[in-house]
Image (cartoon, rainbow, N blue to C red; front, top):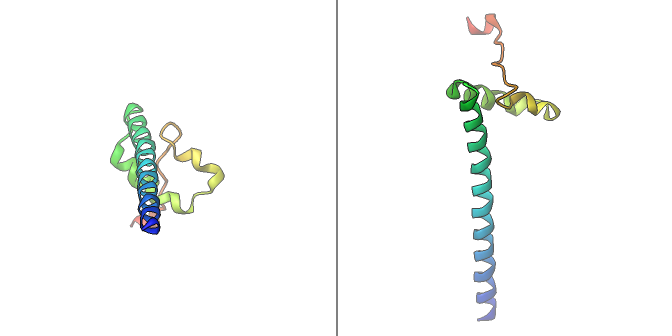
Length: 81
């Protein structure tokens, strides 16, 4: 019985930690979204561009993707055609 209680307690703690992490992640995302809106950025274009570029963007240059620094990526004209 004590093992069951310990497992239940550990599961509760894990669930609570996960909820806190989820709330913090959502708060960060909403802050970026609201900042983009306040800067008059087309939100759909911004999110599509950032999500497309972030996987191979240099980590020491992530500030370029923040709403107040963001500029749409220039696409290669040959690739677009």
